[in-house]
Structure formats: C-alpha cells, structure tokens
Amino acid sequence: MPHVDPLDRADLPQFEEKFARYDEIRGFLPNSILTMARRPNIAKTFMELNQAILYEGTVPEDLKMMVALMTSMATGCRYCQGHMANLSHVYDVPNEKIAAVWECETSPLFTEAEKAALVLAREAADVPNDVTEAHFAALKPHFNDAEIVEIVASIALFGYLNRWNDTMATTMEAHPAAVAKKAMPAWDEGKHGASE
Image 1: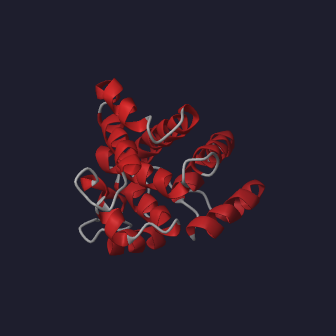
Image 2: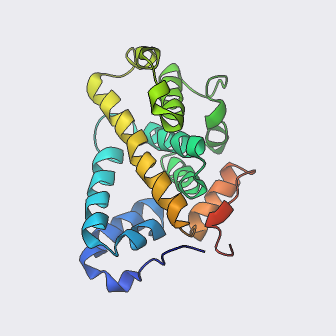
Image 3: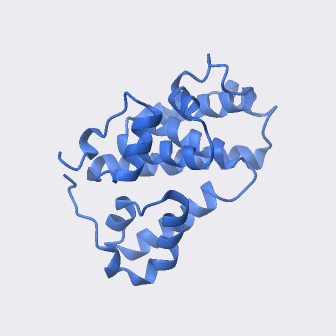
C-alpha cells in the first residue's frame, strides 16, 4: 500500500498532453507521476527531465532502458525494475536479454558497448564512489563524451526514481507487472504489489 496515494488523472488536465505520451509509449500512466503531481511543478519538471534523458540524444533508447533497468536492479527497486523491463520490451529488447541484464559481463547476448554501460550502471547505482577511471576507459571506445553524459544521466535519473518509489511504496500498475513477470520469471512486485 502506498504511503501517499496518487491523484486521479482527471484532476490533472494541465498534464493531459504529457500523460498521453506515457500512454502511447508505455501503455499506461505511472502512479509515480500521479503521486508527484501533488506538487505540480515537481511532476512537470520531472517529466521534462525524463524526456530529455531517456528520449533525446544519440545513445540508443534500448540501451538507456537497459541501463535504467540495471540501475534499478542494483538498488533493489521492484517498481522501477517492472517499468524498465516494460520499456526495454517496448524498445525491442528480447525477453532473454532483459532476463540476463544482471549477468551482462558473461552473457553473449550483449555487445562490448552494452557491457561497459551496464557495468557502469551497476557500480554507480550501488556505490557511486566505487566508480573508477577503468569504468570510463571501458566506455570511451564506444561512446563520445556527450553520450557518456547521457548514460550517467540515465543512471542518475533512476537514482531519484528508485528512492522515490521505494520510499513511497508506489503501487505497481498491472501492465508493467505482466511484462516484467514474462521477461524475468523470478521477478515479483515486492512492496509495490497492490495487495501489500
């Protein structure tokens, strides 16, 4: 059960254009956004930052979704894991690859570029001070400096979201839960389940 209930979408007509984009891309409107909307400027600013980080730039969106999934796995946020399994699926990441994100270093499913980005995401999400020059040296053959900024921004965005959703105990929506369970059979909603 969430600590703060999300608002009703109908009470937020000023965001309907942005909400329609969530419907179009994700297939649902996240409860996290409806909760943030209790302070409309926080919701507005977050949605703009989310757009700039995940949907703009030159790093492939499928990789940014997997980076966000790895970040969420490292912190343990089941809500964000469900959402990012869903978005990885939306951006055509196969289920077997979604399920193997944590083992990316040893899996033949991932390119060297993907491995470098995913390992950075895991380490930065766990203890940012443990990230070393070696992590960036692994990135630089594959990404320019602007793209590295995109990757780190994706990790940082989910640092915020992981803490937001785990602290608020945001209730998982049915659609991303179904996708996550199909892609990652051992996954469960944890404290984000509707019946918790």
